[in-house]
Image (cartoon, rainbow, N blue to C red; front, top):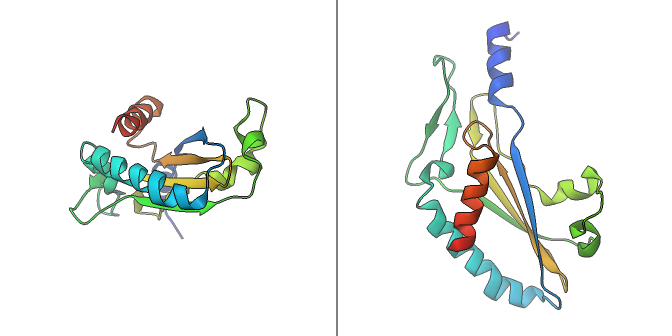
Length: 159
């Protein structure tokens, strides 16, 4: 049975992440063009951006014997980028109307977390053939608030 202090620790460690979802409309987007041109550019610019945000490649660690969590980064760490294809209606999902969370949830990646370790960021790129693509980004709120998350996205877009 977990102690009450351990339960509080887990609740603080696993609080809700910051989630962003961006849509890019490209009519007549083929899987070949996406995989051979767009995806390599996205990955390359992400790797350049992460050079300025190295802690994002690491993990948030909270060992049992430590009072506060800390960021652990090693040169072999990285960011998980998931690439998927969707048959959902891009125009409906990317429109200005009200959307059901259940419809957008598959476009947002989940952070890998446990009771004592959490990824800092997860990225999902979703192709909507002949319509465009989306980029879903989930970051751990312990290191990223909305403003710093937006700054990271702007840096990635700049590269």
